[in-house]
Image (cartoon, rainbow, N blue to C red; front, side):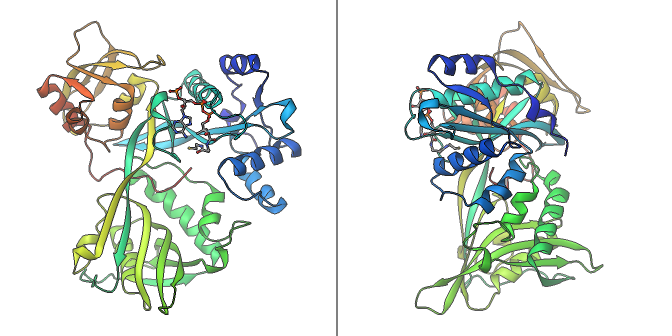
Length: 430
Ligand SMILES: CC(C)(COP(=O)(O)OP(=O)(O)OC[C@H]1O[C@@H](n2cnc3c(N)ncnc32)[C@H](O)[C@@H]1OP(=O)(O)O)[C@@H](O)C(=O)NCCC(=O)NCCS
């Protein structure tokens, strides 16, 4: 297998120097070397409070990690595992009207013995500099805590919905679908999820590409997954027999009730009809009182498919975090809802996006973004620009929160131009 290009981007010399001054070695953890792979994966699991992985788990996860640029921070006096980990890879990010390369960051851990001495800061800043050095215009991550990453310029950009359905009262009112739902075995399920995600991820901003290990995990094929035996899968075939939807779920017993909660691990639908079929299967499942699913778009049609909208509880929460690194490249890569001509002052303490920028979108949708000496009409921080970038957070909302300043008309025009329909979503954790 050829290594993806980003995995051979050298480590950031500034972070290397800073950590070296504290006696730490910041280097690539080479997944082809047994000791590096095992140490990285076990330190990663410890950082996320997971069980120590078995050999089989390490072997399986190693396959995924081989596709990434893994960095460990090593303290000779603290054993052979790294005391901090991070990894990254470049993935397409769907934006309104297209795609852009995004530097995805994951596995950010610092050992409990080395916390709060600036190691995570060195890791994050190192990732951003590495991304910028290779010309990747945006970085992204999903987060364990919402208070960690704005200091590095990340904004909560793609909110999603956690949905709970009281299936006893929901009722089904949607028009009938023309295809059929069938159960699938786990391997078929993993294949369907992968194919359907790849087919549908360009239909909403905020999505990124998946990877093999993720679909295997969702389908109950991951080593060490204690719920694996309970995972079930279905697929939806349209009237022509084409697979257009798939869902991985499990049924958890509600104690003492002889009833179950249907927990959806993931649902993938390439058509509206397929999504309706998956929802119908869920809402009308026998012996189920409740169904729960996370990472749904905030404008999921579900409340309009049931008789009683109050049977659907939606909790919106942050999920996809983005960080613009290259303002012209990022803003020129997406389309806008309306033409606009505005001068923005972007404040970025880390320097990547700092400056005054003129964005012009003409009536044909042609967009130019250039540095300018003109007086800014709107001033915002990199967190706010990044939050608004994919169309998931209105600039007007950020202005109402006192986080975007300037001329009301310019803010309103930009807010409208940046907005997008359907709502962005990010259906996976990374
Ligand atoms: C989160 C974590 C990586 C931070 O590592 P760290 O090396 O202790 O962080 P640093 O010392 O570099 O701190 C950098 C800044 O982040 C802040 N910070 C650190 N951990 C934080 C947390 N959990 N919540 C909020 N802020 C945090 C620090 O106060 C510091 O703030 P400052 O810039 O204002 O001085 C580490 O606590 C950890 O591994 N946690 C468990 C795994 C995890 O949640 N990882 C994040 C995955 S998305």
